[in-house]
Image 1 (cartoon, one colour):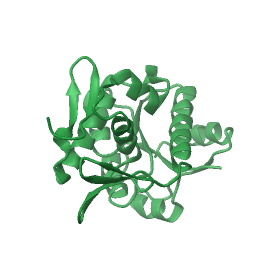
Image 2 (cartoon, rainbow, N blue to C red; image 1 turned 180 degrees about the vertical axis):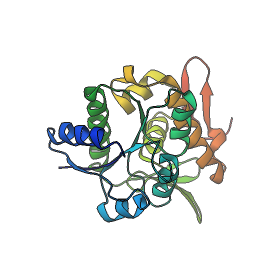
Image 3 (tube, one colour; image 1 turned 90 degrees about the vertical axis):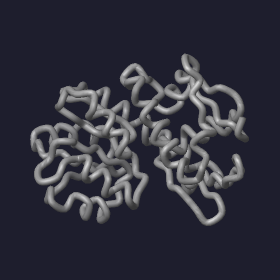
Image 4 (cartoon, helix red, strand yellow; image 1 turned 45 degrees about the vertical axis):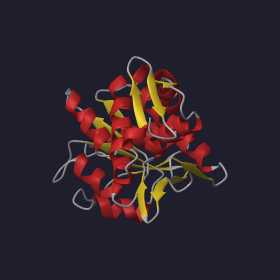
Length: 228
């Protein structure tokens, strides 16, 4: 049974989310104090967070940054604002998915199920460390390190890197990546993948590896074993 933290100040919407998600045997918790979202998150340690952008006191981007300082828990953003920048910022701050309000509950539940299934299946894999371009990629810990420098990736970022490294020096198409990440990507903006890859590159830049993830225009992405 998975625990979901819903950070939503609309009491009516929260009750509907709690009711619908509970029907799928998820344990759903809300926020009691919107000035202490991070503290409540730490106390609960949920398996997934559904996070509204427009909140009292601080917005969802603020709380996402706070959570990402210590956790790679999957985060699905909600937004009632019809602006592409919300989705882009959600991904840049570490979100794993984005749902525009008003939404069909079945769409949100499908996204929740796909995210948790992917994370659960991923966590059941045996712990492995792969060498790639002089770095140690530790799948179970979501880290990439060279000597004494280590960067921590979100689940989506590590999943993308894993697919690319498993097919190193070969192109992995955008459709292949989106199908693997989100299963039914009819509900996923193509830009979501781009933002996730850019975020991955930004983190790899710390290790001097960002140039080894190349974009193949009109095709997809490729992880090079060595600089070409």
